[in-house]
Length: 308
Image (cartoon, rainbow, N blue to C red; front, side, top):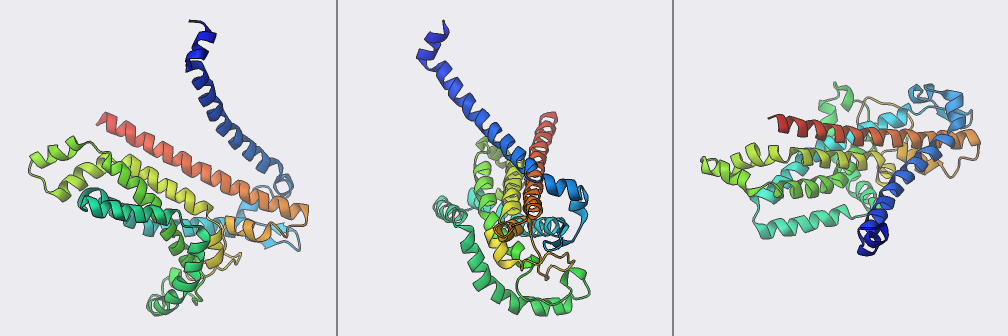
């Protein structure tokens, strides 16, 4: 069959269209990386690797260091995962395995709606609901745990902890939705085999269904982490925007995305602009590393399952 005949049948046309679509994604990624790299050349030439280890952020004197922002980004993302992962996986297990189908479908619909809420709404909720509530709850707790560095200092509402809590609310729907779909995709034979051995419903879920779906669950966690790393508006509204490093979770801080959003418009000097773009490059690299780690972890889990 000639190429023209295959083209008329649609096979070659479909192949070319899908190939171009795939290559377009690769091209966009490469162009994005190239743009960030080329437009951060002044900052890279002047500061080098010291840019990632310096805590100084002084636009007036032309000294820029990314460490406070990298620290704030990683810390708030870690706090959000610490809260969202157990809540999200627990909710996904309930919705997929334990809840009646009608209740499961209704709650799943609400979770998907929550995932579609704009981030600025979460920021407003953080300011007007979460911050006043934390101002009542946190001081007594901090007074009893002040001997711990993470609870040291004064609490004024905006902080790493507040930003982490807001992020956890934002990423829970991603973990719940994806994990639920993965759990529901587990073959029925997995459940029936354990039930035939006399296992309880919870034993079937915890010992058979969850291990079978662990690769998908891990993927949902890393997808949520990628969302947390790049979140801008909600975090900007509740973290305090102070370019300093503090051990206490109750102190204000800053993140990479927040400093880019706040200061990009006022970056009149070329070095200042290139420093902000290099911050974007750092965030891009961190996100790529996170996604690559997720792929590697899932691949490793898959190889282990095959060997078992």
